[in-house]
Length: 423
Image (tube, rainbow, N blue to C red; front, side, top):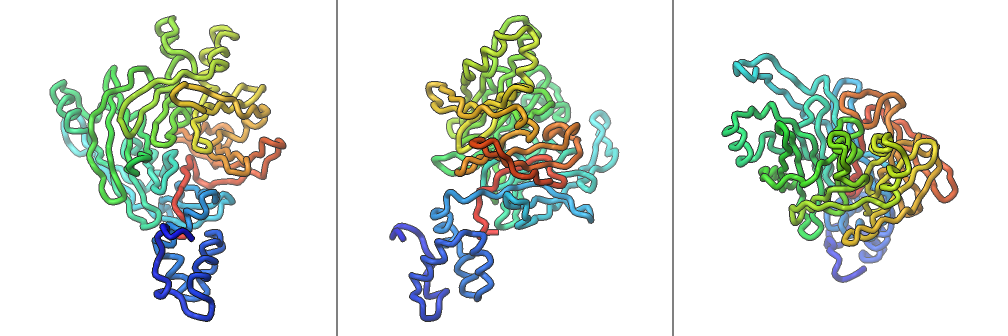
């Protein structure tokens, strides 16, 4: 064990004939799932394997261990919450949510007109890869909560606009309830380990952008930022698949189709991506793969609308991936290999039948790609949709797949990067 690794004091945990350091090293090498079972051996082993310093050291030794999944659930008694499970669908922990209750007020008279609660609502987990879980509710989609699965603590991000933006709305005579949240993305700054959220809202004919810095105990305050310089994808259809966070950068597919239909001029190259760096809080634009752009040139005018439906974004193995799902032809995965040069590499071109698995969201070191989808006819992660979710793993090297796993009440999935030992 490296002398620089933090570790608990062995004397506080061990007894017996086996040297303390040797036992510590043995336990440190055991995978988390098996180690959880060994906690039942004796109180001292449970105390050690639950110690935060041991958990940190264990995670550093098992960096390639498969991650856990975070999903919303609703039990038979109507209680909603977030559950953490492994890739086989085994539930590791369930954290019930306190829910919400909102007094509905008439926007013109200011008179209360009823109440809305989470009793008949369902939780939607944001597409993140963090040791925190960010979620909202289907009927209360503009407000967001952040959960720490290790402690069970939940914070509510501020529901109103930033002070600067609220003042602008007051001056313009615009009510906040007339404004809608189009996007909210969550990530972690690599250099500082700060958690941040980016929120893009629609106010009349313009978009506004806000950023917030938060942690597991402090919800922070929204700050107004410059809006994106180009039109980001705004359609409700498959919206969540058009945005992803990779290594502290938020990526959005740009809306090239509607812009072309409105003006008749291609002002945005097909497949272009807007980027927002959570550290510098600055926007940028990436050109998409040349072959994706060429799809429109090789087809007639319908190529624009077809490509809009075929493209989505994903994070696989720490890379930004553009997914080009060409109906009845192939599913191509383009990896961004050089951000500065805007270089894309098509690493996988999978048979068209893979598209029925849904959308890729996770890749393991053994080459397996995991897909998530809703039942056919229900749409992908759509607000207001019902239906069972499915988790499917696929081996692109030999074109084989495992049996699909049903995910009851799951409309979306986040990847939980915290340790199983901390739950």
